[in-house]
Every structure is written in structure tokens, then in C-alpha cells.
Image (tube, rainbow, N blue to C red):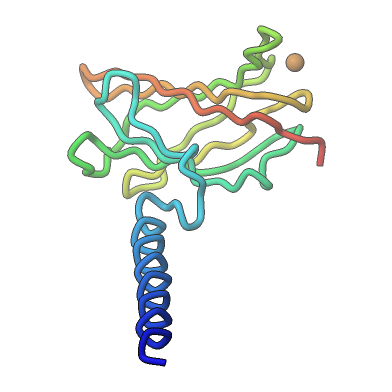
Length: 147
Ligand SMILES: [Cu+2]
């Protein structure tokens, strides 16, 4: 009986600690709400960029979402020049339209009219410039559907 009890308590402890660990990890970098694919350092490591969007909100047509830009010390980047270009890597084409990017404050930039003109695998290529610092980052969305 005592053995069983110890075993059960051991199991409970294990499950509980796994729960706590996974919850703690889930709290990082918005991953509880946004998959880790939406968060990346830029290619030269100058910025930390998070696309604030759910995969299910991206569809063929015009898309809107926010981008959070932090510097490498995780401070919000004010008033940067941000451009974003959608690209289909497997087919080698983008779109004819330009997305509009406006600064909302607190390091958050709003993207409007980002067009995906057909379903499939899209990359969103982001270019960020502040003063002399310039860097790029690419986010990959394997399957953007028709709504
Ligand atoms: Cu295409």
C-alpha cells in the first residue's frame, strides 16, 4: 500500500512539474497566443521581431496585422522605417500591390493591405531601418488558404 501511495505521489509530482514547466515556457514570446514561427531575430541580430497575427487570420486577399519591433536588448523601437513584402518562394513571385505600414506606438507597427494573391506557401520579408541600423527578417507561412 505504501509503495503504491509513493508511486502515485511520484506520478502526480511528475505531471505537476511538467505542467508548470510547459506553462512557464508557454509564457515566453507570446507563444501562448502566437506560434514561435511568428517571432524571430533579424538576420544580423539587430532587432527582435514579432508578427502579432494568428495563422487562421491570414487568407488570400488583403491582410492586416501588427508587428512588434524590439532592439537586441528588448527595448521598443520607435519610429523605424518598416517595409514588408509578401513572396511565394516556390513560385518566385510577389504581388503588384504595396502593403501600407504605419507606426502605432510602443514599438508596434500596423500593416495594412498586405496581399496574398493565391493560396499556398508565402514568405513575409520584413526590412527595418533606424538611422544607420538596417536589418531584415523573413517569416514563413506554409499554407495561406482561400477564406
Ligand atoms: Cu504563386
